[in-house]
Image (cartoon, rainbow, N blue to C red; front, side, top):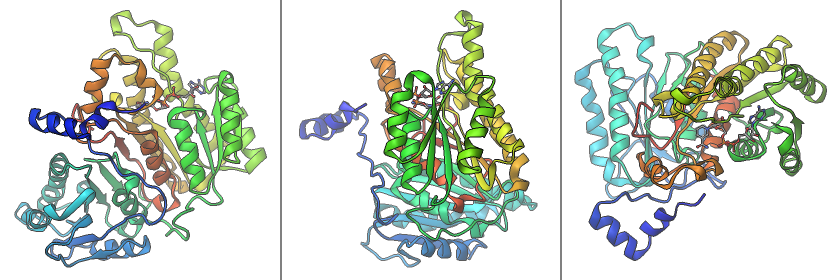
Length: 448
Ligand SMILES: NC(=O)c1ccc[n+]([C@@H]2O[C@H](COP(=O)([O-])OP(=O)(O)OC[C@H]3O[C@@H](n4cnc5c(N)ncnc54)[C@H](O)[C@@H]3O)[C@@H](O)[C@H]2O)c1
């Protein structure tokens, strides 16, 4: 749905009112429309030539991103990438201030800041752990300062995985990550430390097969479109009442579809059979189907608890296990769970939904560790306030509060979640596993 307040804040009178009353001023966010990943120049910096510096330069080059290590006065940059991996103690953190303070005014609107460090849990030296863990506080704070639709994110690399940075830097520096800020991404966390470099940056999923549940509308339909755009053959699944929409979308995208309820006893076998017969296997599984049945716990009915939990996490687990047992998730494949900010921060009236979505996080992280030996990854996308049909039913006051309480002062679009899914699905993200990515504009409530 549209954001009328945002439009109002951009007309001449609205601008005046917003400025003088100190009201939220949601910028129009740039989103990816094809062509180069980054339209503009990226400035790179490094603290005492960290072990990741060379890999950053190589990753930017492979993604055809224009980058320089020399700051020019007066030049405007679309992105700033700082390699903090060489910081080995608290005193060295001043390198962040030395790099960023002079250049922040040169960051363009909807600019991108990425800090790269070493995953603290992979380090032994206590001083280095302090320094690297400090990067989280730094990036989350700077994310709240930058404004103008810009984002700040942190990438932790496990030693040895620095060569697998390309797809992640490409995503975080491009407009594909318009609504992703204040996030921490880990590369190499499950022991997979390498990933192929994309041959065709515009079709990284060429030759791949992607299954999306709950695909006929909302976020699922956006996922289908983004995965098809990136070259995948898509298979959508949805319940019988939405068959017409599902079929139309599948036909539009030259894909296939399965009609059914994921909680049905035979769903795992039906899906596995479809995948085996038609494609011989699947590369990307997106467990997007979800429902809400909100009530405070004192009024909660057992069936509404059970249904929400089973659709969110029970059925996805059964389906994934069936596909794995039958060897139908291809090597290099990925499983993506959809959680929610509610599963991280909790929400009034959503004990069932928040439990289910927190369960998704637990399940996917456990799965990521289990399937790493087969070269399969698993990650979670946790959307915040998204502009979908669903939010139309929220009372206006609560809706406005939810929409503005993030660093971007606005809701996200379905494509923002879809872009995150497409990044996880990219074979170049083969070392990105066990992550929970909030697509929430850096939600100000709860940890995000
Ligand atoms: N919209 C948001 O703001 C938001 C925020 C956080 C998380 N999410 C999550 O994102 C996902 C998609 O949400 P959405 O807003 O697009 O919702 P939506 O209601 O528009 O779409 C959900 C889809 O899942 C399908 N589905 C539901 N139960 C199913 C079942 N048993 N079997 C097969 N399909 C089933 C529905 O038919 C529908 O097509 C959900 O998991 C939701 O919890 C959404």
